[in-house]
Length: 365
Image 1: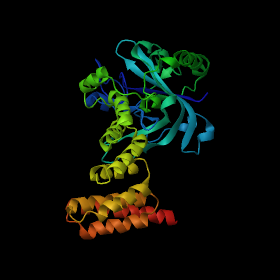
Image 2 (image 1 turned 120 degrees about the vertical axis):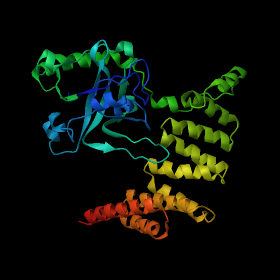
Image 3 (image 1 turned 45 degrees about the horizontal axis):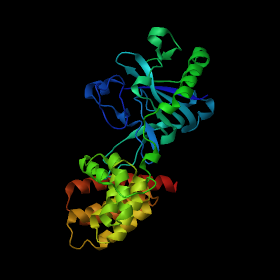
């Protein structure tokens, strides 16, 4: 059994909200000073996956401690990650876990585009269906602290513990695995099926139409099933767009893309949706599609501002470089340097060009 325990701040949901009666506690000095925590996203379903973070004391995760086979590898697969946090009353308890997770030696950066605004880094990744967040009442399994219960019996000074001791292997891990077996059905994190089109698709009743008007505009999870049903009986661009927006704001970018495409199909003149889709493709690493659409927008941009042109140049340059062609990307950076009047962008572009030239040279070698 390859297992890793991580100590994070105590929260209810871990889906981006810092909510409830508890302010973020534990997890390090930064959490306490800022009353926020990067691990608040650990159980957010993003395109069918969860990405986990724990504050470490090192610039790498020593995955060789999971198994010597990982000594010269950059990631370890099929790991069970146990998420623990200091409950204000109960002590350090298991709040959830990942199964079949990938653990990375180096901290990973998530692609961030203007349409998400969510800058995240992570050590762990698993499918949303392999993530289990427990409701508060079920967070009853306590994990010890070595400073109180002795070496090898729990967390030391680090926020992660590889449970390598004989006591951990013989006593703690078997009990934890039994706890997991008995509590899988109790999880509260959102699975991908919640974002799927409901069946059967029926017209909204009068009562449901009344309820729809009462739902807050930003309650996308509750709005989504209504949006699917409305589109099924009125296949307009606006109704397709409503589905796309719900999925987009629920971080289901890959599922949102076909609905943005459908919106454009129904309304080919919707420029704003095309601009969104350029970044949506980029967010999902579909760089060729992003580039093609950005080039089309550029062709139609004669009446647009210089800032709009600069933005498209930047997007196309990124698509080229991220797509594996830094030379082509550098050509678009040169267009910015030649045509732009934005001093800040010019300086940023100069620095970017230096980085990409280094990247290109390393690829050649």
